[in-house]
Amino acid sequence: MSAGVPIGIGIDTLTAWSTGEAGWRPADLYLRRSYPRVKDSVMAPNGLRGSMITNGLLVARHVRERGRREGVDVVLSEAHPKVLYYASTGRLYDYDGNSVSMDAALSGWLGFEVTTRDSNQWDAFASAYAVLQGIEQLWTRDLHQVASERGETLWHPAGSSHYFWP
Image (tube, rainbow, N blue to C red; front, side, top):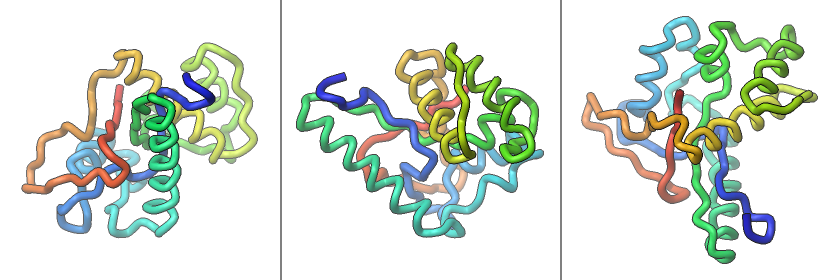
């Protein structure tokens, strides 16, 4: 890290937009098909609210631009903490009813004690964990590399990005 610039940012937002119908991306379709029990948490991008689409990308662009000024090529990875929790534990994401167990899972993943105060903070830690796994090359699957089945093309408005997945 240089002058407080991270080497990577994991973010629970769309880091790639698609020309697919309703904005569907190969990564979204992969998650829905692979985890049918939680498929409803993977929504068509065109159905998401504005803050999901814009605010996360603004943060990503800001961090990357700062990194470039400091000589750091910040790795950007999209994350989907709700599906990631299910994929990793087999349990449904329920922060309000299960925060202690979810914090315990997160602590085990990260290797240090984590106590979160709300679901947003939990999601942020899980997203940071995902990019760390990719940077360390422990997760080599990149959902942004899933082959298109419907002829979609992806555009990365914050620059190149990954979607590291276990």
